[in-house]
Image (cartoon, rainbow, N blue to C red; front, side, top):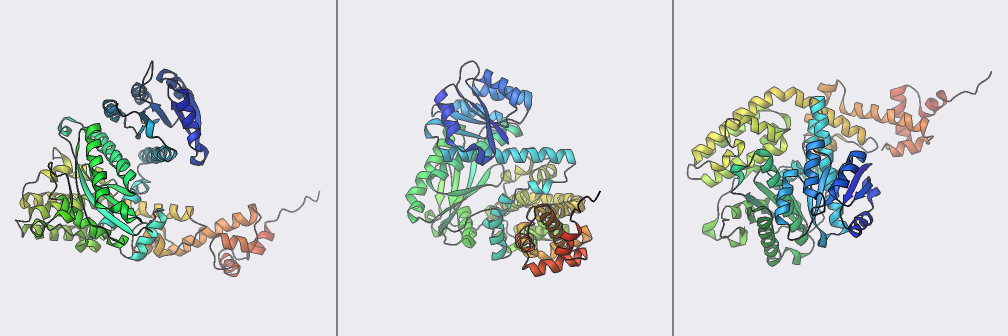
Length: 540
């Protein structure tokens, strides 16, 4: 189990945190509690907890000093969740240097908020451990770290799903609920005047901490998904069944709180654009297109603009990336450099033909950037490599001042992506198949039709089938059959299950069909297989 340590100089707070959550349900064991940082350090050395929940202000050694000591001694783990009060803004800013998972206000602490914070810590822990394993193994598991969650929302915001079925399958696999009746999208940016004096790690901390607070504050007003797009921009998808929650005054209050609180904590500004409400998930991309149009008119004086604020003369044509949907998704998902080169060349030429459409050109380049960051393995690292000669890396797109400069930037992106993708094509395809195999093995008791598995990974069924056959020298269905039979043999012998029970558990249509499949693979029926493996009594 994951070990968690509680550090607070108030015994009642320690008891409250211990009893507030059923830790076993989260796979967590509370390994101890300490009254100050010095005592906590000794327990950390003894028990090696993965997560520490600590107050900031404590005697002898405060929470920040504790986190600093742990970073210097142990590295990234344990992860820290800080307990704060309203007046500790400056201390919270310091906590950013230690990559805190979250900051919880003591007076507002609830079982739900504590559980949500700990779940974020568990997710970060899993990502960190997976990235460590990746580095040790030379990258063989990297595609599992791509963040299918973010990829899903990027597709949703840009209407990039091939079909309604693909959307439903991926939402189900990611355990995302889209049963609400109202949806509204927003597009935002985090502004800081201090980033020029920060290194990359500090900028990442500032952005991730600000985004986490945005997520927390907006979530208190209205259920939402917050999606990171790059190191400055983010998208929000609000969802509800209650029309009153999506009322303009509610949204206005939510964004006012976001702008004020994030500025107080981190000295950054927020600007955002909001689209209109839609009734179906398939229309979220329409709301997002409107949000980006509204965002183009946001400013320091009016940080949040809604689509209803725009007059006819105020509308800006945003770049509709869905026009290039099939080609871009195929290029990024299949590492098809020919299609990628052709498509980006077409877009670049389109921009060059309309030199007065600067806002549309920047919007288009940014959206292609978001797709590359989200859909490619190691998207951020790949793009940083491509724009290594630029002082601000791929974020240089934000200082392009005219359409010609945007087109030049997009040309650099195109040539760099094609070069990188071509060199990694075979390795990446092997990785895709490895991840599909892992998915099949972990879902072996489910029905696994080709179209559903392909949808989980955002691939076309025909492409996955051909790729699987070429890489494994075995057909997709044949591989699943072999794995199901292997599992069935274990269930029959080791768990003493009846034939019809095994057939039902492994998703076969019937016991008769299961028997037919096993006989085809093993040459004997399930009953004959069981009898042939019976242990004979000792006759000596």
